[in-house]
Structures are given as C-alpha cells and as structure tokens.
Length: 316
Ligand SMILES: NC(=O)c1ccc[n+]([C@@H]2O[C@H](COP(=O)([O-])OP(=O)(O)OC[C@H]3O[C@@H](n4cnc5c(N)ncnc54)[C@H](O)[C@@H]3O)[C@@H](O)[C@H]2O)c1
Image (tube, rainbow, N blue to C red):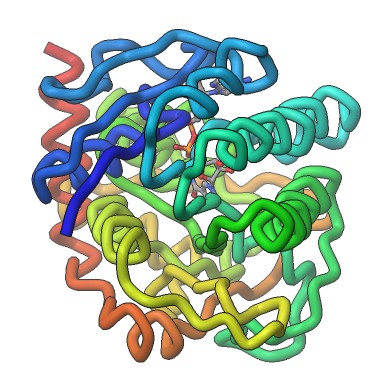
C-alpha cells in the first residue's frame, strides 16, 4: 500500500533515508526542509523539494492544501546542548513548529502523522533496561521535554482533528549522511576521526553503553508504521514504538569495532566524564516486532561498513 507523503527534515540524515524508503515502496514523496542543517543533495531523486521552515505559514499551508495521506515529521532542533543553552529556541522549533504542522495536517485531512521522538531522552534515566515503552517518562533535558511535549500534542490533536498519530522512539541512529559534527553521532565522529588519523576521545571510563540502530532499519520501520493498523486503546504509549536493537554496546567496544572494520588501530584519549550523561541505555523492541512485524536486520558491522564507504566517497 502506498500514497502521498510529506517528509519534513528529508534533507537531513534520517529523513533522507525515510524519503528513499517511501519512494522504493511506490509512494509520492515531498520533502520539506529549511536546509538549516540538511543539504538539498540529500533529497533523493524522484522526491519533490519544498524549502520552508516548519514554523512558517507556508509549511502549514503545504499540508492544509497538499492532499497528503501521511505527514512524516523528522525536522527538528536535535542538539541536547543547544536545548540546554537556548530552551526557548528549541521549543519554538520542536514544539511550536510541530503544532503548526499538526494544524495544517488537520485542515488538510491527513490520515496519519508519524513523529520522530527519542527513546534516548524521553525516559530520562530509566530503571529497567532494555526499557519498554510503558516505562515512566522523565526527560532531563529541554530537548527531551520538547520531544515528549510533541508526543502529547500529537495524541491530543489526533483525537481532536481525526488523524492517527504514531511516535517512533529511536535509540542512537547511525549510518551514511550523519553529520560527524552532530553531538548524537558518536559512530560518525569515530569513523571520521580515524580516517583523519586523529585520536578517539572517550568521555569517562568508556564503559557507558548505548543501543545503536542502523538508519536503513529505521527507514523501514517508518514505512511500515505508515499503513499498518496501530493500537488505539486510549493508553498514552499505545501508538508509540521503540526502534532500536535492544543490544548494549559500550564506547570502548564501539571504538574497537570501528578500528576492526577500518583496519586501523584506534588511539584512545580519555577525557573527563560529561555531567548528566546516562550510564546505560537500551530499548526493548518487542512491541515493534509484534505490532509492525519489524526487527532490526542489519548486523552492526555491516552498517558500520556502509558508513565507512560513504565517508570515503564523500572525502573524494
Ligand atoms: N540521530 C539520532 O540518533 C536520533 C535519535 C532520536 C531521535 N532523532 C530525531 O530524528 C529526527 C531527525 O534527526 P537527524 O539525526 O536526521 O537530524 P538532522 O539534523 O540530520 O535532520 C534534521 C533536519 O531538519 C531540518 N530542520 C531543522 N530545523 C528546521 C525547521 N525549523 N524547519 C524545517 N526544517 C528544519 C534540518 O535542516 C535537517 O535537514 C529529529 O527529529 C531527531 O530529534 C534522531
């Protein structure tokens, strides 16, 4: 099944892979992005491109008059540190901008809205690992609050305006096109530093774990979540899905894997632990398996290889 979809943030890392995933399944794709971080060259061939800010009347109008079946929302302010320094700026984009789009989606008769939330931040410092969707939501950063607020707006406006809302709570996504300057992209940072023969900086003792999911697996989950029936039992977490691997990998193991795949010995430099950093993080994906029939298919090292190949091509 396919239809017409608007992908916001489709000139960025995850959104561009999602736009490709839809095109592959026969969808008609429009990408909306203000290119504040993304690049027009990331927009896949075959997609229409609209340069606009999600906070603008143009973006709202694009949805109100566009005849879209699905809004897939990935445009965002993504940097936790920026949200700490400038919380009003973060919430203008991540909350007000999203609500502006939801308003347009309601007016335009959009059937389903998919929202990029974050399993790395909405649960705060969870007690249970791998963390299920029903765990308490206690975000620590303004970015985490803006993602959770987005989920609440999505639930409320979906009920009021008659569309379905789905929240995708990602773990650490990695893969080609991730900006090595972005804070979340430790895998990209390690690969690019090793290519430049720079030491890898490890904060704290390097035993802190994360759950790394490959971007093409994330794109597939989004396409599946666009048409499959989604539970609607009134519970807040019913239409929310963790998208992850449930495997924990620590920073030193990550550095070793990057070295093995690149056949280079990484030099590690330890730096002071960053305040507020979570010690362990991993998400339970059994619900996505059951409801969407989705599970991660990429072996971590194969994803790493694709990322390394992309970096080498980019450098040429
Ligand atoms: N990368 C991860 O590991 C991760 C984890 C959890 C959630 N997410 C979420 O996934 C989404 C995509 O993240 P990404 O890593 O691909 O980031 P990215 O920065 O590569 O993509 C975001 C895109 O949004 C665009 N954008 C930013 N502000 C905009 C605005 N006001 N109007 C229009 N476009 C705007 C940027 O130009 C960029 O192309 C975000 O919502 C992010 O919060 C990412």
